[in-house]
Amino acid sequence: MRNGGRISAAIDILRDVLDRHQPVKVAARDWGKRARYAGSKDRAWVSGLVLDALRRRNSIAHHMGHDDPRALVLGALRLAWDWNARDIEQACYEDHGPTPLTNDERSRLVMAPDPSAPIHAQGDYPEWLTPHMQRVFGPDTVMEAQAMAVRADVDLRVNTLKADAEKAALPLKSVKAEPSKLLTNAYHIPARDPTEREDSIEGIPAFSKGWVEVQDAGSQIAAAAANARPGEMVLDYCAGGGGKTLALAAQMQGTGQIHAYDIDGKRLSALIPRLKRAGTHNVQLVHPSEGTSLEPLVGQMDLVFVDAPCTGTGTWRRRPDTKWRIKPAQLEKRINDQREILAAASAYVKPGGRLLYATCSFLMEEDEDRVAEFLAGHPAFVERDAAEAAIASGLLTAHGAATVRRFRSPTGSVRLTPRRAQTDGFFFALLERRA
Image (cartoon, rainbow, N blue to C red; front, side, top):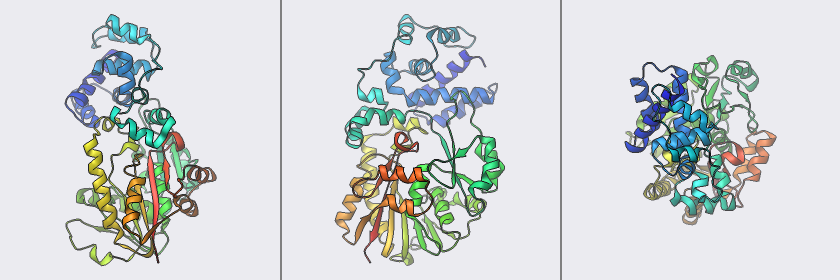
């Protein structure tokens, strides 16, 4: 495909996302089915352009004077991909390209960005979130938000049940992985140019053998703060796809017992092949259809891990379409969910045991507020230093230790962001039940 046809395809996909409210992966997949002539490089190019247009939707719309799919795609070429107006115009005249530029589009494509744009336009987030963003980040709101509007890196966790960092180094060279600056048993793959196809992690032998798992560094650090120990009894209360279950099992060196529970039985069942590939034998799945299966665990757990359902604001780099679908009602629902989940999960912590609360959100309403509310209503629990707990696990490098200490709150919780740590947005707090 020539660039003109690729640009037209990106406009069509973005129209399905914005007008028909399709998830971007579904819209791109459907286009791929219609465009059998498109090669893998074409698909990567088109998808990369769509995602960058969504990541920077507000700033592009402000610059172009419109927020329709055509304006967003043309603006993404100029502002995100640094194309000049002449190259954009030339592509529009190619076969299967979009219609030629209008005079207004041509003039806007040569303009410099407006430094006086509203902060929600500069930061590329929904306007209604401005007070929430400023509450968390204050004068750094725009810089923090802009760091969430770029392509995300990929992090890999070495599964120490089967390999170590040294053993995994050679096979990971094929995907250009570098040792993590934050974690001792992890690798980091910098984000590729958006026009290039990413290497398939699932296609390398190290993945199929269970040596490595794809897991964001922020998620790995949150799991490290739980500091699961060999022989302990652990409950992963919102196990989901099982990424943290697998990380905890590796920390426990395959001993003790992990009970993985999630309200979504389908997601929980998807963990079975991951457990097999990782060589994990100390995990028991607790299916939601078995209504009383958690009762014997009440007051028995050394550790309860709660990766609570949230708005997912910390994952905007990876799922930019979700950024524009979040509404106040959704935030309120998640707050209520978190309130109920924390109260329910705490019943399984034994005296002297630990509860690790984490979200992939940077909103204080889902993070510090929920922890403070829980502690006010549950005097048997006290907050501990989550940063020092993560460091005590031995899984952090010296740089990783300095990072969590730098972004530790006065109460001991930690918030990581793309700008602060080159991770997804993650919050975690460590609570302990008084002995």
